Every structure is written in structure tokens, then in C-alpha cells.
Image 1 (tube, rainbow, N blue to C red):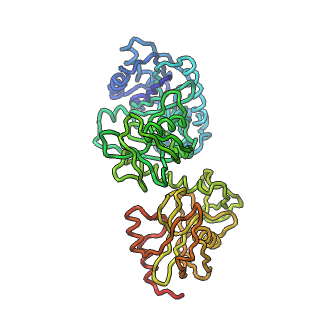
Image 2 (image 1 turned 60 degrees about the horizontal axis):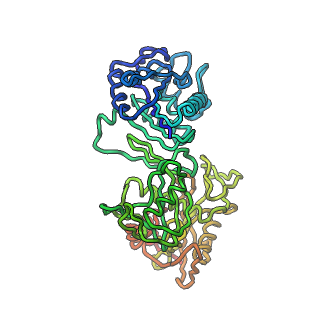
Length: 507
């Protein structure tokens, strides 16, 4: 394992316009002590740096204390913005354009693609020369950001803005050969200030979008419920999962953790999506898996006290900032993949058909939209027909109103009629329907319909792998089910339902 500590330089003196010779401010020189103290116990083998003075000076005190020479690498230098000085008023706009378009540059400056290419080439040379060593590299904000972006494509302009004033700043990356296996940030000023609370940013990403994985999380299904585990000396439950060990693939780590923390013997397991957890002082990346367990053994003698079945996420959970976000994304992923392969028509944001189709389950490109329909079936008693989802679908065993994605060739009304037929076996009459609302949510155009029509529950035909139960419920009853996490609230405010039911109904 090769470990690299990238040290973003301390505060520079911007009154000096020459990029190569720009020094640190007096405060920057004092802040070098933070860098030195941070690195002292890291067993560093070699110190490298960009040739620019502010980068060299930031790591110089540590190198001197350890009696080490600093080797400079020209290609770790900062981005060349332009031969002409860019004013503060212009600079932010310039940077945003560069992050929006990696090929954008001014006059004789560099684009971010060029900065990234030479920095990654220099890094690969360092990894080959100093394999299995612990390395310090003095670097710069933009140069380092392009390196991070190379391994984490979700890192963009907004992330850059968060670190632009953090000086000094550290990113640790662990490598096996040239493959980055982990990434962790450290804001040295933050360590000194030690704020009372932390803000978590948790994001889901498309499977394979990240190149760096440190952790795995496994959502487990057993006997049509969610299986969670409780560690010893804790009353909180969580997923199987943990750190990927040296030499493991994410899948190997997921299988190991699943056995160690649940005792699973026979199961099917698949990777679902990537995730990121950003704290003020850390970036952690991982992969999320779904396991369908067929057989459990006795718990291995590790850290787990018990496993338990739940209908949803536990009330007392480990990592409460993270688990609900990943749980929701898993539900969405299961829902998309339960009908994987069907074709959707692609719309633009103004609801114009593009003439293209998209295969369900694949990532939808930015700027493309698909049509989703929801329908409330209201009888003459003011009750709504709702169905219970099959345990193999996203949001398993939860109640819902009928709905789904329109397939290629569907318009909104045709999609509603088809979805009702597929999920309940019932035939609805077009003249009984009314389009209530249209909203755009993420990559979908969502239409909500109301149909006033009486049906007998005995006429409902439950569809295999779609629905397992059906019943009538009032708006008030649905509201209570939402409060108990028994009903999926994905369209139409509950107060609107009460209004629909109170209107005079003509059958």
C-alpha cells in the first residue's frame, strides 16, 4: 500500500502576482506548524512538492525537522490561469466556467483537463518510483481538486468553493499500484477549532461512478423483511458493512461483512449503487449492495450481538445521518430494477418528445426526463383503493396508490389505464378521470390523476410480483398509515385527498 498526503499550501500573499515566487503570508508561515504537527507521526518516507514557493515553504519546516530533502516536481504546479492578471471580480466566474467545461481556458492559460492530465501523470510516476512508501506532496487548490475529480467525478465546482479558503488542507489517498483505494480529507484549521457539531452530506451515485471505495454497506432481505444487526454494547441496529480490507474488492468485502455480521450462508448479492459521505473533515466513499438471504447460521463470534427483522429502518439506528438516505435510494433502485429493460420515451424539460428511448435501470442523462403517472381511485363512499407492494419490489410490503413509469408509446392517460390494469386487474373508464397536477421531480415528469369509479374489492386481481393485497381507505386512514411508515407518500398532499373526497361525486 502506498500512502500519499497531499498538502494544499498555507495562506499565500496575493499582493505578489508572480505565481512561481508568491510567498506565504505571516499567518501562512505560522500555520506551517499545523502541517508539521500533523505529519510528525505519519512515518513519512519522502517529501515532494510543486516547485512554487508557497507549496515548498508549507512542507519545508516538516522536512527540515525530519532532516529530509524536498524533491520538486514541475508537473505538480498550479493551473496557469492567464498571462494577464485576473481580478477578484472576474476570478469566480472564470473558475465556474472552467468547472463547467474542462476544456475552457483564457488566452495562454490552461484548461482543467490539461491541469488534471499532467498532475495525474506526475502522480503515476511518483507511485511507480515510491511504491509502498508514505509520501508527502506539497500542492495547490486547483491542482489538487483536479486530482480528486479524477478519482471522484462527483467532485465539482461547489466542492471546490468549499475548500478554496481552506489553507492549509490535506487529502490522504491510499493506493494499490495505481488504483486509489481510499480518500480522506483533513482541514487542519478545523482540527484546531473543533466545532461542537458536524454536518453530514450523504449522496448516492451511479454504480461505478466513483473510482475510490473505502466502505461497503449491505441491505439484506430475509423472509420478506429487512434484516439488521446490533453490535455488542449498543441498542442501535444497522446494516452489515464496514471497511474494505487490503486486497479485497468491494464485492469480496460485502460478502465477508454479510457473513460476519449476519451469519448469512446462502444468499444472492448484487452491487446497487455508489455513495459518498462528506463531513467537514472527511470524504468517505463506498458501494451499496442488496442481498437476498436464503439461509442463516448461528452468528459468528465477532462484534454482533443479534440480528432482527424489520419492516423498514429501525427507530434506533446506527449512523442515523446516513442510513435513511441510503435506505431511500435502495428503495428507488429496487423499484427501477424490478422492471429493468423496459423502454421509456425521453422528454425534454418542456415535455416535448425527443424521439429517443431509454432503457429502464440505466442512468438517465442530465437534461432527459421520463413520464411517471400516479392515480387515485375514489369510490362513492369517499374511500381510495390502495394496494400493497410485493416484497420483491422497491418499498416492499408498503401500501400505495397505483402508479408507475410510462413505457414507450404511452401518453399519460394510456399509461394510467395500463398501470391500473397491471396492478389491480381493473378497467377504468377514461371519462371518469381528471388530471390533477403535473410536477417535475429530479429526472421525471410526474402526472397525478383522480378517477371516480366504484369497484368491488372482490374484482381486484392481485398481480404476481406486483401486489399482494388491496383495500379501501379514507384520506384520514392513509394519513395515519403515512405516519406509521406503512404508506408511500410520493405524490399528492394528503390535504388535497381530503378535499377530493369531500366534493360532491357524480357516478
